[in-house]
Length: 221
Length: 260
Image (tube, rainbow over all chains, first blue to last red):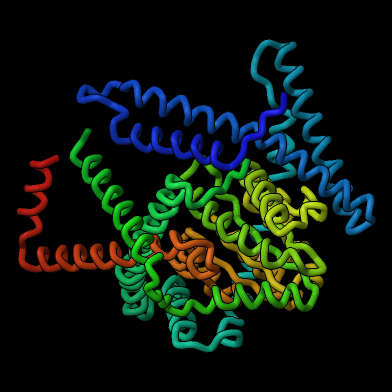
């Protein structure tokens, strides 16, 4: 028997579960701080969501493999894709070997996969971080060329001021520079950041309500 | 329930009520004028250009996990995705979607498939149009860079939850003369995008995307509700400043502490 989960059905499930989780947030505990039935149901759904997200990881890895296998077949950037697939399957293999070793020794022993993380993944990501620093410096230097507005000029001036205020040789000679830097960081930057966060919070509430109402449906069925 | 929880529930109920009210009043023919956000005007142009010039649109909805608070940004990206895919799929090169979260990649696949179904092009749908490019911030960026640097792509639309790794994506766009339109919920990444993206989307503008690309009347209603609540919050902040200046803040704090 083939079950077809059409939109109204999936929407009803999503709305009900969302509502229970939201109500569980407000009525999930009683006055004594103990979990109520609603709280228990909310936790059940949340644990289910976490499990589903973990399962999605497997699907995601399969998607990654299929995209790069297709690139190898079409010989489009096949070299990088081949390296990616070899690295991916080697890492999975190393992880599996570690699991077998753990079962044989009877104690947690993930030294091989930890080696892969410490000596391959971490240095590669750190290198990307270094590239990022170069990219940002270049982008900041090019900002005024790309977009000459009052805000871009202000952004660049504040950036220069903050950078100069952070250099000991400068702020030792001009204490005002350090004071200005601290004032910018503690007053306008914090105020602006909080303003943006308030807007983000309102946007998050609006998005959540639209999903609860079934107006936005990021699931199709 | 605590007083704080009760206040939060009332806040959400009022928000919900106002959204419904404004959605209903919006349907009764009143003309709504939205303020101009240049990035969203350019999103429309980018879609038209992709169809006319036969270039590819790259849409990235970030790496906001659905079990975390940043999922809201991911859902904004998804709601815009359907509309963008529907408009751009008729071009020679179908849009490509990249994500950094596996559950989001599945939802994106589902959204793309649904958009293709609605426009009657389901035979052209390929599951690889939605790609999970990496699971950590930098591996995600590294996987998406080749797509941003693809000369057949004219524009990259980056709407979702990103950290500072987003600079690598905008840099990729710049190196291949592709335009980048980007918005995120992360405050530090927003500063980075202001400097690196061609058209940055700042602050809560990100959540207004649905209203600007005509994703539905509820998007406009929610945007108007956010505006109302923003003014209320502005009033509360000003009242707080006045209370502090007049030395009444301690009295108000004591009053709230008594209630809580």
